[in-house]
Amino acid sequence: MDLSTVFHLPAIHDHHQAKTERIHQAIGRGAGRTVTAPAQPTAAAYALAHHVLEGAEHAARTSDQDTFAWYAEHPDAGAAQLTEAAGQLTVEPGEDGLLTSAISDTPYYVLGPTTRPAPPHLPKLTLEAAGIAADHGFGALVDAHAPVVVLLDGKPLGSPLRSWTISRMPGTVVLDYVPDNPVMVGRDLVHEAGHNWLNDALTATRCEIDNTQTFYSPWKRTHRPAYGFIHGAWSFSLVSLYVAAVLPTTTGDTRTFLTAYLDRQRNQLRTVHSDHETALKTVTDSTLRAKLRTVYRHALAL
Image 1 (tube, one colour):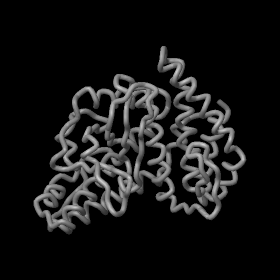
Image 2 (cartoon, rainbow, N blue to C red):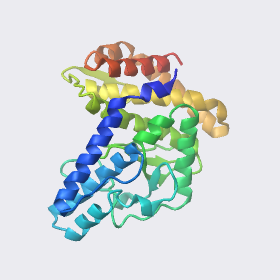
Image 3 (cartoon, rainbow, N blue to C red):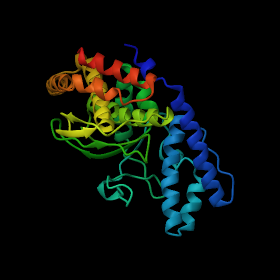
């Protein structure tokens, strides 16, 4: 399967470009000046624009004129001062640096004037992880849908690792990580980038999902509406394909862990076989529906 054709959806690029321009126009109106998108790849500018929007909105609500002006003057949310490398922008804000709001109970992080560069070994880790993902066909996914990586806690292999995204901060992923293990970081980049891709695809295609019916999710161990169920099947299908591709390159404890992980995912993907096709009928865009089906079927065949 050529994954590049799966992830290629021109409507997403158009959505990224249009939304980025709208955000900078809005910030410019508030600042009384013209604010233009930074000279970066469209997907990175899109992700960073949402940091600008979130930070500027908070500054406006709290009447913090200096911080609002900072965002107007830094349409890349200060990214140029945080890294000189191409690819993922990695930050390590610590648990205390995460935010919650009335709109989102899930913690998230906003780049801003107090953001500091991550220690050099962490950007190196994420760049190596992104490189491994690219080597196995996931480069377009990770580059476009995980350009901002927020690393939390380094944990030993086999420990529970948290990772998540939130729809209000597209292109940003939050991860725990296994130190010095880019293969494992690559796994979670693929997983969370998959969620961001699907959210963008649904928005870009104006796709509606009927959530009146629920389906059992073996990953959450509960019944979920079609939207959440489809998200789970999509992202874990992608991760299964990644692990199957990268497994022959691994050794030792990493190989043992990922072998068991892939066996578990195979069983869970089989569990949802009949429900998956039923849930896909709720996806109104035929092109998107076909992509979701193709990835699931290839993962099911592993």
